[in-house]
Length: 358
Image (cartoon, rainbow, N blue to C red; front, side):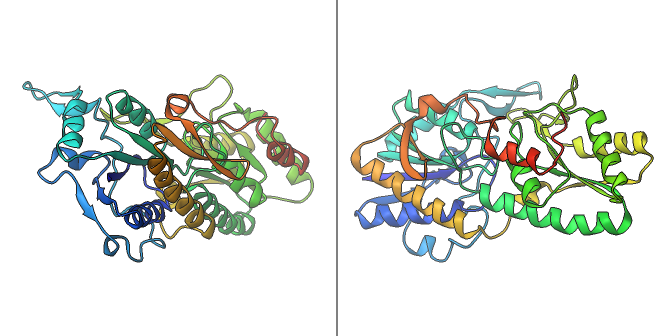
């Protein structure tokens, strides 16, 4: 058996642990293992597949990032290229990718990635490539999976950052707005906001009202609390408003960001209180993974190899009710897991007095 491993989309803590686990599990079975650099990028170079051995993955479990590199512009079905007139276009180069897999006798691919990567993986299965997916995204928005690798570290980093900013907010009696990642789902904002005892949490699933936030600020002032901590997901938006974006590069998803600055400015105008905004950004992606992320990543990686061994292809390894199982890639493609508004964690936030913006 000859398998390949790649990591696609944004990096996430735990990727290296998953790579190591899958590699060692495959080598133990006597298989050959190859890495694909930068998503699918190296498939289009002179050395498409890099041989992996025990030395390749030694000591990488504790490291952030991915030794294979990653890319969010490497969709083989929509690859950016420069036209003759100098403008940029997109072309389908997936047939070349399939041909390289066949040329090098790659029997299966372990694709580690999020919703975009799984969408690509599903389309590649329709071209004959046998794939087992591993769920990766700090956003935790992959449909059908309770927890994705990278989420625990991201929410932990966000919680620590909010804790630190809270002391500054209290010292200066300011409104502090902290923007966290998550794209169109509010998992990071909700978990880190609740854990750090934020006063306001704004998530994409609940369009927010500035009047509601102002009322919360006034309520706190009436109790002698002259500062307010506001955690906002990058995909949150006001009622009747739009998501704030930074634009879109050809071949990439639109870049979200900037909502914290808008919220801070608007609240300062409405309350007359000094405000500041902080964007945590890629800080949430970097650094050593937590114990939980190391373990879940290793479990996912080893489980993917068991799937290959058993011939369970075109599936995504997922955690459901604290048990590993698989679901078809076709069920995941094009779907997103949002925060359920009737979940106990949303109810908990409301019960302890956190304003959710509505």
